[in-house]
Length: 489
Ligand SMILES: [Ca+2]
Image (cartoon, rainbow, N blue to C red; front, top):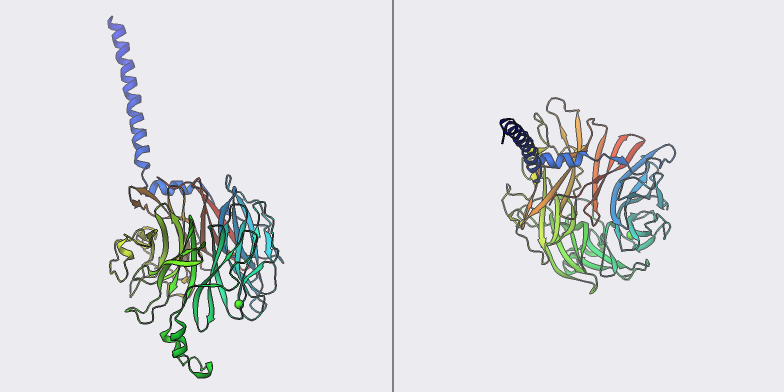
């Protein structure tokens, strides 16, 4: 080997070492980004941008879209919402829907599709898919006296099969805030029901894919003991005025959520505990067997804390329940929490043990420690405008997606209120979930604008759609959607 060839080889080796070194540097950066870390999660969310679901759905020059719900089926996400006006003296809201292409995230119905245009208010829709069509359910005030639950099937092609809806439960008392899932060959529509007025109970009815209601007499899932009501109710059932508290020893159940897993359904809701140590409402869950038409496990209390509305989804191990925690006492910190349940409603999350005082072992996180800019004094749910909280959760192929809305006030300027939609993607490591820090998906920086009411649905490939309402002006409030990539492994 000559000296010149030797030098040349040394040069080649040096170049290769340099290239290998830069590859190592690059690959280590890739590797450090690979775990479910905040940076990776934030970057993943940044690749997609919110867009309006039905920007052309103008009525009298206004667009006021509220209370979105979403489900996946046959290559599309079906988003449903309550579409109305802000005229307080003439309440009017209809149910609309629009399809989002699951491959591109683009709206297929920018003008919206009218599902129900009946008189008065139609509100708070929920959606499920039966393998062929969607079922949209909602609370309906067309009677002009009290709410009923109505539903309509919508095809993946965007055709409404039951225009203006079919009554699911239309008794002469309030039936409200329905939720829906599909399991064991039928839809299960669940709602809060005031037939035992003044307390609410949780009832359901099964509906076939053809739109036939199987339970014309609804099934009571969790209701107050009728004997206790009869014992406490004053003679004559007179309204004795708001200072008569005879019903204080009774417990209402309200705001149900439902998810399907195989042939079973998890129903979770809020239950009052009038004589519990804290006296605060508690998240409660039960398992419903649609084939048998009965409750097969529970009800069980899920945590010792106090919470607002809850959201549920299935996981490979069982179920997950998302909670927006209002915290207790003077601690106003915001907490997005998830309780995992197995198929028998057992949990290993210590936070979720009833009456547990453990506050620092949340499955998710304190939002104020991770999301709020320095100098903010944290959340203040006591200020009316900040009081809406609605978590959302979905199993997205390889992990959990959770989202919530909240608001915060800057210490320096009490009038500057920022409303936020935050999302969190959790991967699985063995039996444990890895929770990266939440990221802000959408936010506003003015007190007269807001983002609120997130809802989530996932496709089998792990892609998910996050929808929420974006209140931009008096005559402009749009449902926006963000297509989220697959959750990390
Ligand atoms: Ca009714």
